[in-house]
Length: 135
Image (cartoon, rainbow, N blue to C red):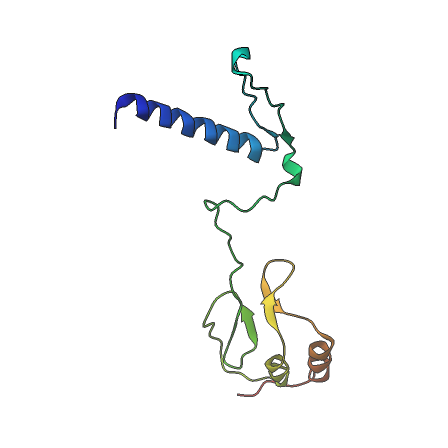
């Protein structure tokens, strides 16, 4: 490839990148007005402004979409809801641990993993509140 063509292609790429950055930051993209010499008989076309607010913006492929980490049920009796897989606990059993078998372990509004406090779960835990520990 000759040197002049390389310079022209590089300049075109830089201009295109600059227009993209300008558009991405909320500016308007303006179609260029081409001036023709009067002897050609061609008329100039007025600029067309396209507001960026009306355009669909998609995520950049350079910025990965990060999904929240999964929550895991662990513990000897399945009573622990955590962001860590394979949590191990002592195997002391409480009746209330059975309540978690039908409960939902998920990321809470705080961003931490936890048991979603449904009416069924809270009623079950309240009903087994006086249970003792058994080995």
